[in-house]
Length: 309
Ligand SMILES: [Zn+2]
Image (cartoon, protein in one colour):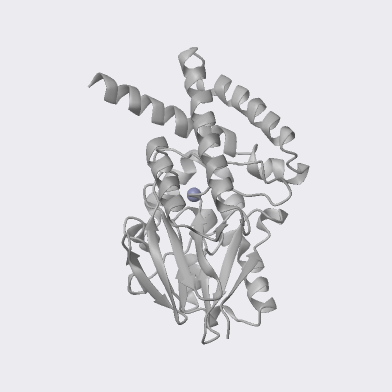
């Protein structure tokens, strides 16, 4: 049986094409899940599995690229169905006890947390498999490989997979930013505080470039065929965003003013690259802009501190 990768659109808050869960079916026919989507989208996840002919309890192994809610929010739910959860060594403890994770997200999302992400169920420790850089993960008769890719978050892996029929592919989480099929020139970069690191992210993109991948699967959203082109665009966009915010800081603007200017500038990019209107909320506005500005302001403050000490 050839290896197959299926994309489940969890239909996050009724936004199609926003958050994916990937189901990889190996030689034995067993499904491996990469990314769970958030707790509030479990219904969409289950529906997607059903369409492929699976029940949640058929999934024995779940790989998550990092512990943010849009990627691993339903990990506890999948664990309850019996799955093992493979997660970055730094993220493992936070899936077992999500208290700190929730508290830090509350700082970004405030009282909209429940609506935006749903319930976060702890993963029993015995079902967590901490993953280290370069680890081989055997699941569903396939061998995945962990590729450490910090920058968006310190605790981030991409998962490489190489098979005869697929060639070399990788599930890139947020490390290769976003891809919108209808607007391939549009890139959205989540740069959340406190872990966003420009230089680390650029190195991660270089590392992904060196992998010689035939295709990548960002969680937001779907398959990217032109890997070098996409990675180059992401790198440029990343530099542009960081530079834009740095110039605003240098001009003495405060956080709210920078958010306003950044949003307008980003909306211009969305318009220039023909991002379809229903996706503007998810990829540009909503909480994205203020989160991004906070992450980048914190990064530049850290850099300035390093220069003076
Ligand atoms: Zn993330």
